[in-house]
Image (cartoon, rainbow, N blue to C red; front, top):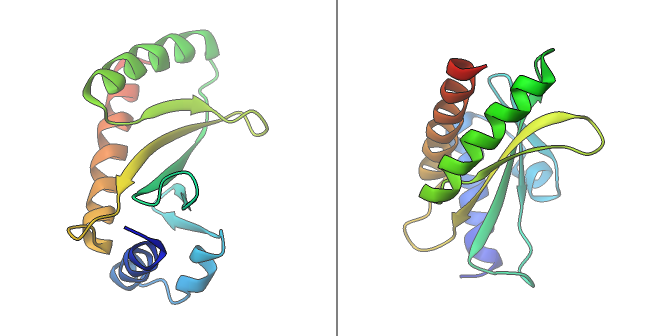
Length: 131
């Protein structure tokens, strides 16, 4: 759609989670949900119909070799189902999960929150089960 869909979804998300400053999030701020920091990146020049969602899942476990192997296996499954991807932030070394959220007429703050909870839960459970 366009910037107005993005703003609408962010405002609805803020209302659902009780975050009183949608402008902060729209201006590039992050939202804390449980132990995770969520960043919403919207670039209309790249794709006006997609919102890129980045979730900081924290530092990697101490056994990094096993963690990297697990992350690659999870990424293989995620890629096959088009559910996003895992990566390691080049500056912080934190594990990030990212996915695209379609901005269409069905998009809503509640649906975005549901996606965040579902995807983080799926990825977190897979990672914990194998590391």
